[in-house]
Structures are given as structure tokens and as C-alpha cells.
Image (cartoon, one colour):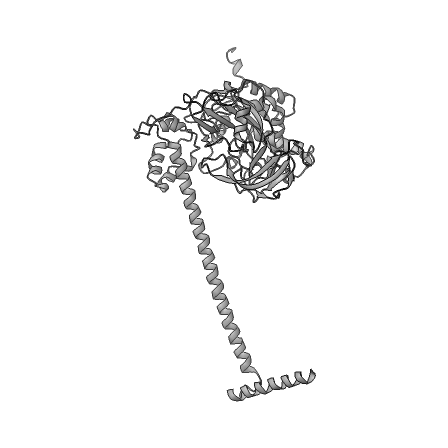
Length: 523
């Protein structure tokens, strides 16, 4: 009986298929508190830092802007506002290289900072939000430009407004942070546990009173303890649970974390809301609390600057738009020349061609890897059909089949094997003995499918426009012929319709002469 006592009250956890145990490398950067990054001389703020449509600029070039001032307005339903991260002069809105796998440029607002860091006038805090209309709270979150800070960057105001067809029963706060090296969420949970819980309470209110589950990997005991202590000081204990989960990559994936905490599977091509669940990152929860309770927009975030090529790895509170080179300098510069510079983690991040790109809302880590940390795998060899990729795939896909069809550009067959269920975690490529860059093939196939769908939509729109034009021309021609018939009928019905055509012409000429004479006499 004594052996069973520790099990009483323990919540059940489930497991997902596959996954990897990776060296976490988190001790490099989680040993010191978060520090503020210095104000850069120039901020480069992309207008597209989220899934959806780019924000529409409303500030004018040459205008002096203040910290927190709205620079670009959300354009469309799935979009997010962009704000100035500090005060200064808006010197340009132009294309600039941004952190993106393509390495291409995108429109950015460039601010020459004045060093004063003067705040703009902010909206009133919503301390009494439980008595407000939820639509008003969502509009505040939309104004603040809050997006998912776990990497997806989906506008939070949209995610917190699920369809009325689905009742949300569970709100999951994702504190797993499963990818190696990254510790920004760990430090956030340690230092701002109260803000995370306040944001979770606001989101629960918007979702209609769902229960809250907070999942944290068991390699973050300090963060788990900080949240438990903060929870004990609130009245949220009746509907909030903090669960420590086993460390296994990619347990921080949305569908994987839902499986671990609830045992539920999100169906293929579905979203968690369809099974009554919404998942949000801990950073997003803190940003929601700042927007609602403080009236502050999302203009900064914690970024992990790490890797053995970095002199002093650490976590920095960084203004959105700060060049990556400034963060590396603040972290002690390079210890040695890195083999690769990565935005994000080593598994799902992407290489940066230059350190001159700015930090965006989705940039959680800047990773400088040495030759020993990221050795050159050499040329890819032929697939030996070992099946190890299928064993570790957390989405229970067949990576080998996806690879063959993506390589052959047989996109329909790739979709038959659930291409878009791939979360691009990189587990398959990590264990591949032939060093095949499998994720790159899947990304290529997805982009080709999206491009093909876009072409199809464009062709359908062009055909619809052509058919509308033809219909309009035919309608105008029918109307013209109808007018001619009506005019002819009126002439035929006029007095003297029985006269000859010659007599009708003479009568018309005589009438015209009489009108001209009358006009001349009156003049």
C-alpha cells in the first residue's frame, strides 16, 4: 500500500509515436538571468512577421515615431499589426533581407533611433476585462500585434476566436520547449510566471471557461516550480494543472503535446479546435497579458543567443527589428568562426546567409554552431530502405514514400501519403544513414503544391473574369438591339405612320426649319 501512495493523484500521460532523445545543450544559456539587449542605432521592422497578409503601412517616411506607435495596420482577417520598437525617425519603407528559409528580401520599416526610447500614448489597461465584451478584448489583442511566439506566428486574435461549431473544453499552454539549445521559454517561465498565468486566464475567458493544462518538459524543474508557486498565489487552481512531461523531441509539437496531455489525436487535415482544444505558447500568454492588462503592444521578445561558437551564450530581451549582429556582439561575439548561423533550433531552424537580418516576432533563437556541433554530412547516398525514418516519425507517416514521390515530382501521390501532416521536425533526416535531406524534399513538395494551387486559383479567377466580360458584352448587345426595336416601334406608331417614307422625311425637315426660325426670332 505504501508503494501505491506516490501514485495517488498522479495524472496520466500518454505517448506519441516515434520521437528522439537528443542532447539538449540547454546548460549553455540557461545559467544566467535574462538581460536587456542595448538599443540599436537602426531598427529594421518587417511588415510581415506572421502567417497571413502583410500589414499595411500607415506611418509616413520622414515622420518621427514613438515607442509602441502603430506603423502598419493588420490588412485582412488573418494578419497582425506592427509597431515601432523604439522612438526615432522612420527613414524608409523598403525591401530588406529578412530571416526566412528563402533568403529573400521583404518590405521593412527602417527607424533611425534617437536614444530616448520615448513611449507613445498607449490605450487604457483592461483590468476589468471579465465584464467586457470578448470581441473588445480580441480587438485589443489584434491591435497589439500578438502572434504565436512558439514559431508558427499565427495571429492570436484569430486563434482565440474559434468557430461556434466547436466548443473549446481545454486550453493547453505549451512550455515544453523541446528543441535543443533553446531556453527562452524556460527563462520566461522562471522570471514571469505570473504574467503567463494572467494571460492564460484571459485566454480561458475568451474561449468560454475551458480547463487549462500547462505542459513542461521535466528537464526544466526551475520553470515548473516557478509556475507552481505562482499558481498557488492565484484562484486558478480549480481549473489549472501543471504537468511535467518526459523529455522527448518533438514533444513541443502542437499535436504531440495534445496527445501527451489528453490522449486525443488531431485528425489529418484538421485543427485542434475541431476536437475542442486550443494550444498556445507560454510567450504568447505573457504577450496577451501585456496587451490586455498593460496596454502594451508586442515590440520585444526573449531570444536565446547560443552555440559553442558564441563567446557568452545567454538570453536577451530584444526589440523587434534589432539586427542579429547586435545580439551576437552583446553575447561576447564569436569564440570561433561558426560553420553555420541558424535562426531557430538545430532541428527546425534555417540557415542565415548574413547576421544583418533583423529579429522578428517568431525568432526565438540565434544559434552559431561550430564544425564539431554541425559537421558536414557529406553527399547524400542512395536510400537503403532501412525504415528508421518511419520508426521515429512523430506524425506516423512513411517518410521514405514521401521522399520518392517528392523527388519524382509526383505531387498527387505525395499528398496521398499525407504530405501536409508532416511537421518538418527533422527526426527522419536525423536518423537517416544515407544523410538524405528529407525535410528539404518535403518543403519543396509543399511549396510546389501551393504554387500549383495558386496557379489553379489564378486560372479560375481569369476564367471567371472572362466569362463575366462575355456575359456583360452580350447583355449590352441585347440591350442595344432592344433599344433599336423600341425606337423603330415608336416611329411606326407616331402620327403619319401611314405616309410614305419620303413624306415622313419632308415633314421632319419642315419641322426642323420651323424650330430654327422660332429660335432665330426669339434671339
